[in-house]
Amino acid sequence: MKRILVIFLVITGAYIGWNYMFDGSGVNFAKAEDAVKVTNQTENISIDISSVETMIVPEDRDDVRAELNGKGTLKVKRHGDEIEVSVKRKGFFWFNWFEMDQTSLTVYIPEDYDKDMDIELGSGKIDFNGQSADKPMKLRNLALNIGSGRLTLENFDVENLESQSSSGEVEMNLIDAVSGSFDVSSGRLLVKNYSGKLDADVSSGELEIQINQLLGDVSLDVNSGYIGLDLPENADFTLNGKISSGNISSNFQLQDKEQSDNRLRGKHGSGKFKIKADVSSGNINIK
Image (cartoon, rainbow, N blue to C red; front, side, top):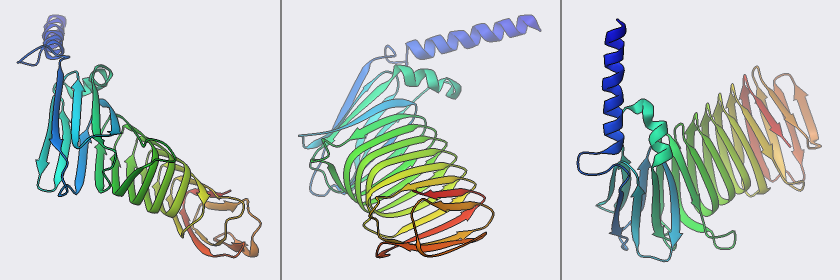
């Protein structure tokens, strides 16, 4: 039995060593790059990666260019009105954490691109920042689908933001959106300096969101999770909270306050915007 185990370990070790040193056509940690020009017909840029440390860099250019340092197959291709960037990895899936430490991807996009973007991240990490708070990255629609990876997003001005995350960690800062949708499952999402309409759904996860200026209605739905909503002191809202077996709390002094085991209602300021909060086996804290 021991002999069989030793033979298995030797074969496995040899395979892993070969897999990480060579990829059939060359040395493992080679450099690959590819590019596709952005035209007036380009409506969407899609980025799909896993087990790679990635930076998305807006700059003065007219194409989408990607550079991969490490092991994997890089593709930058056009499908109709969409440009797709993807990286495929080889090897045993349980060694992806090792590959992630060894491989990095940089995606360069035009800083004046203002249409749609889709980002899908399995494991790994993505950093995507606009130039500055005064010169944010402007997009029409931004869709994020985060698995067990980590995403940081900063300096954005978008019409519609859709974020889905599960078992991952997402941090956002300085986000202006006409409307934003956040779906968190078994993960953590931290948003600072947000403005815009807000729709949040949390299940066994955690969402902390700080709003600089309340400019639209807010809908919060929690099931076995937590939402912390940080509002400016001068926010004008009407709160309508419904509780099953969880809790809703507010640090604001509410006018016409109604509170019971399954309800929290009241108004702050002029009551202009509606905050709808539903809790089932979770907690919402408005502060």
